[in-house]
Image (cartoon, helix red, strand yellow):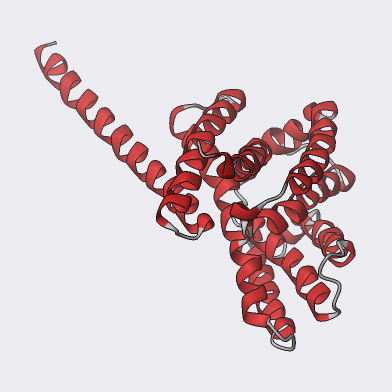
Length: 271
């Protein structure tokens, strides 16, 4: 690997490690688009930071993360009134519309909106990696300490508002760093597709996670190298790589299952 690509690849590796973990929880809960909605809601905070000329300040994105987490932690109560996925969709539409309206009043709104969506991971710096590693490590430690609580919430629907809020707030803190680093599009792919690939073959959370990490690492390395080699935007290349791998593995799984059914059928007839 070209030395120039080392930092982007390490950034992708960090994203894979933390987002595949959260992806296991999100897929099991069936709230697939919560990442897009929460990330875009944080994007409103980033848009406000641009509007007020505080691009390097994390205060407004963190405030948006706090508010978004508090709202999503009410998921159980919201589900009694309306479909949660529909609510998440409305939150996403509101967030993206609000971000566009805010950035429309800034000097370089379109470019800033593009950066929020796509990021610019190919130019990541060592300082960005260190700060991201620090945030992810702290959040990973919190989830390691309280893993039984979080697993009980996800797999047994056990847990009150505080634990729901803690889950979504730590997730939102990850997204604040991730969106800044890689953009909303790539963050969604890192969250959903590696865990989805793992679920194609396994049901145990650990096996799903390990498979997701392996697939994410391979796609990230190939995507970063292809982006640099062919002068293409990094985020769409990696996202397309994730989606392509998922479709191929899905087709292979279907083919092997169909083949297995055909091979078993004659034996059934003979019996």
